Length: 178
Image 1 (tube, rainbow, N blue to C red):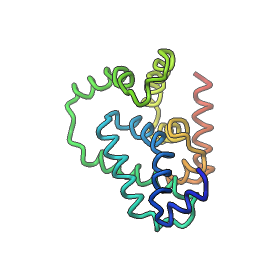
Image 2 (cartoon, rainbow, N blue to C red):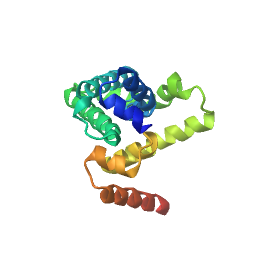
Image 3 (tube, rainbow, N blue to C red):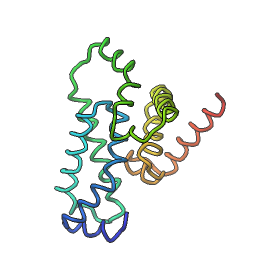
Image 4 (tube, rainbow, N blue to C red):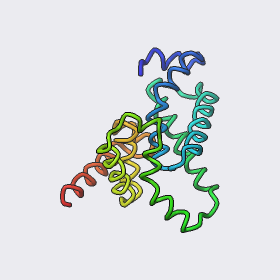
């Protein structure tokens, strides 16, 4: 994103903030949806995150920090969602896992332009990610689903770049063995 637009957004320019919203929305939505698996809740979390960003935007000191700040807000909203979530019936959870392919296929915002092969790959990716330890899973989701750089992933997860890079390399090495 253009640094001039980010600076305007940080100073409270509503038009610039609208551009920030448009620029980050899709990647942020895909990342949250990949974790939550519910369109309505994903939309609520995204809305809450952008509202919080707008309300606190003047606290951000550097334009380049805006993206990681937005992802941290969103990560905290997801944590809050999981903390407040009521216990789920195991059979409902199993049903959700079985229906993941259908949910992905019905997601018109993302799926309209994907081929059947891409859908199968996405379902396979979800299967693989769900089997990883949580930290590896989150690093890979942020890196490939949200399209973040290693530095940005580190900022969101409050880790050093070296630590995130190491986690990323270890997981790539583990996958080569299989």
